[in-house]
Image 1: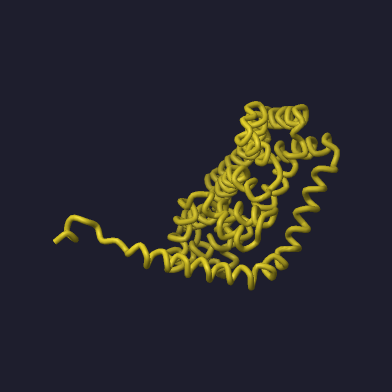
Image 2: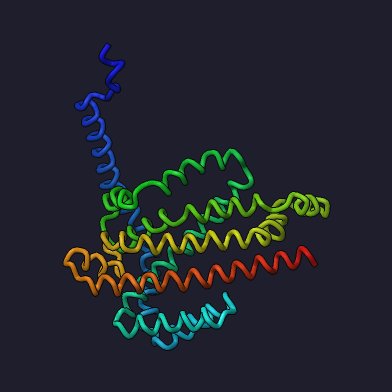
Length: 296
């Protein structure tokens, strides 16, 4: 009757043998296909290195002017624009410009990839409850899995470098994009959809001309969250060779360099605030335009 009082467990030897077998099969898969998978990602690596070099070699004043123009067009806020310019100037004055440009390059590329993946998957989830039932548990696992765990299979497969880091960041950052795309499309009023059907719109016409425009404020929130998640993963990705603001933070932790860690951490916070304020302000403007159009 001991089994009543003690939780049954898999025998230790059986568990170890099973885990060893899985590890051996994954190592065999990595040796067989790792090179091919790495070669498939080579064009992306070349583009990422080119984009990183472009940001680093472009004059700082031109980068700041472009950033100020983008922030102004997105937010139409003088305070947000001036704050963004001041933050970038301080980053340059403290000698963090090149690392910031490296971080920006991978964040921008990862965000574009996450949008390219998350938008169609979110649309598929909104269209099909069966797809939503399948994808939702996967997103739950992706969002609750400790970030360091993502590194293990990727490093075993591709080693260390920019591409493994980019894959890890995309995996970590894409769930909010998928979920909020699905949510935004599902929140579109059924009366609007019925009106589109009455005018003879096809399913794709309804998607592009009705659902996506009305869901855009929610989708912008998803993009905002994706950027924040990607920035949060930068420090962790530095463990596998991603250069940028994360590596000095890691060095500061290892060598107890308080000032270095603080300055690089504040630079990451500044970039996050710039993205957050600009994207949130743009989302609010879209929401106000949507409400004005509905009321008008």
